[in-house]
Image (cartoon, rainbow, N blue to C red; front, side):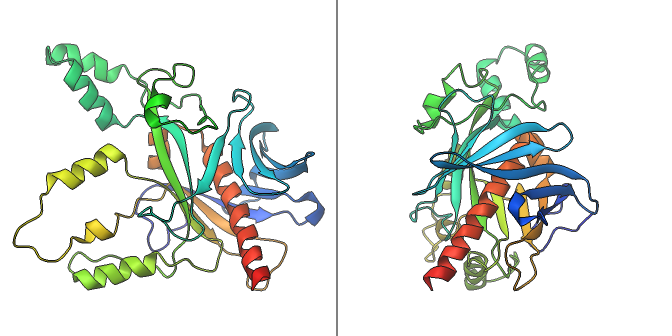
Length: 315
């Protein structure tokens, strides 16, 4: 198996080769098992009256998994599935510059994932305090590891609380809204060292947030608000500490769920190739079908391609 590059954590990953079709007219992108010619999914493009629509199809069954929607004029990026209610979609939008996770070209989106085991445990512990005997079956009967049907984030982007109370979108207590970020792969990556100085770590974080000039990128889940708040309140500032905390100015780097390594040769035009790695453990925690993460990655890959072309054209 391919060894994850530099910043990838040591964990079980599954890898796919992503490459454009040899036939330019097809406008297809193939996702193959690494080291084989076995196509697992492919993306093909169609035009409607006012949109550019790309279908993500499972090769073995010819099943339409997801559709990617962009306007012919203007800009938006939406993901839909055949099972979604009419008018519902998942929106990818630019990361605000005020966000601590902002980098140029980064996009963010929200979707529902399985509730983390720790959150479920805390919730059930607070509700059921009677006895360990009554608590045990409650913890084991939940289908935490099973993939649930994937409900979308409504187009009007309501609050997380409103989404969590919607019975038509998700079974009660089985999932929650999670925010994700897609960002260009930082290159070169400077590893963090526990023994390094404050300035060294700050410089490493700066270098790691400097976008590269390739199509490499990562897809990461962002820390949950409740977790961030608890971290901020657990450690009061020391009266003897005069320098700011590193975590106060530089957010922790989330582990990537998907990592795409651009391997397109220099001076290659009209085609692309790369390696997509998916963290199996993180994927399993979300409970979301793998084809969704592949679709999101392919959509962002296209976004970066057009963004790079626009920058080159503007210069």
